Length: 263
Image (cartoon, rainbow, N blue to C red; front, side, top):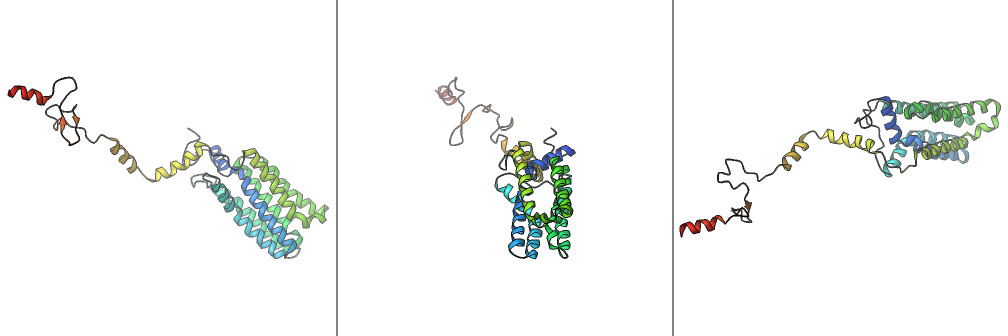
C-alpha cells in the first residue's frame, strides 16, 4: 500500500507524512528552542550580552538533538530514514536558523540590542521551508510573523527591540504548543505504517538467511521416506524408547498375531 512503501516514502506526500509523524510536526523542537531562548535571554539580561549570544548559538545547534531525545523517551523512532527525500531539507532548515544567530552576533558587535531581533528573523526564515517539510501551512504564518515583527519594530517601535529575547520565547511556546495540541500530544503512539517502515528496514538488512532458517526449522524432522518405511510403519506411533508400536488402534497387536502363528 502507499503508506507502507518502506523503508522510506515513494511520493512527496509519503515523505511529508513520515516527517510530520516522526517529528510530531516539529512542536517539540519549537518548545526546546523556546527553552534555550529563555536561557540565552536570561544570561543576556543578568549576565553579559556575549554569554547570551553563545548560549543561543549552542542552544540552536542542540535544540533538535534534545527534542529527538525527548521523543525517543516517550516511545518510537524519531529519525528520518536516509531514503526519505526530505532529509537534506531538514538539515538545511537547521542551517538557516544557525546562520540567523551568527548574523545576529555579527550585528551585535556594533549594536548589541539587535541580537535577538535578528536571530528571531533568522528563526522565522527557517520556519518558511518547514511548512514544505511537514506540509503545514501554519508554519508560513508563524515564520512570517517572526520575520516582520522584529523588522517593523526596529523602525517604528525601537523600545521593544531589547525585549525580543522574551518575545521570541513567547512566540516559540505558543507555536510549539499549538502544533502539539493539533497533533494530539507528545505521547501519541505512532501509526503502524510508520513503525512498520522502521521494522522493515532492520529486517531487510538481515538478508534471507533468517527466513531460510525459520522455514527449515518449521519442517517436520521425523518424517519417514518411502525407502525408510518399507513395512508400512508410517502411521505407527513412536514409543519412549525409540521403537515403534505397530498397533493401528483397531486391529490386533502384531506381536500377538505372531504368537498365535507360532502356537
